[in-house]
Image 1 (cartoon, one colour):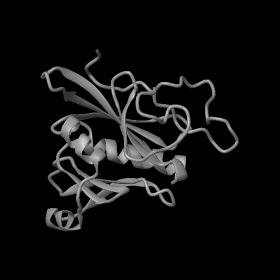
Image 2 (cartoon, helix red, strand yellow):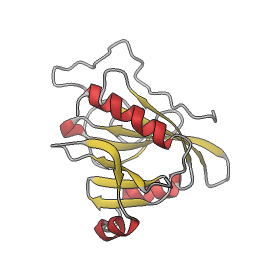
Image 3 (cartoon, rainbow, N blue to C red):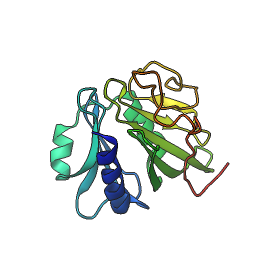
Length: 184
């Protein structure tokens, strides 16, 4: 997927899912997820971080089909379920010039305190990945191991460096800012 396609998909997904709550997550393969946002028309957010064809879009499936196709959840999916279950999707932003979407959620932590969490969807070929970020853009967990600065648990998230060693917008701040209603 190129930047323009991701931009168009981002607009469609945000218009359909903004304000909706994170529901059930289906692990379709090691690199594919379907997320239920409790849409009345049985639409699910499909995310694939398959290096040869990373993608994100809305799919229409019957719940029974997804349950049948899903396997044992990976640890990352279990963490998403734990941290984001019931959280409201507040916004979907795209890092300028990048194939990265930031899905910001208004969630509640274990102490019932409001918290902003972001699911970074990196659709960048060999470095395609999912990252769960806290309100400071620190990586809490990743779906796959990827190398490079801003790609490891505990680091501030940064999109991967391109093959030519540059980023799309060198003047862009390295940290992404989540767009949640709640601020720490």
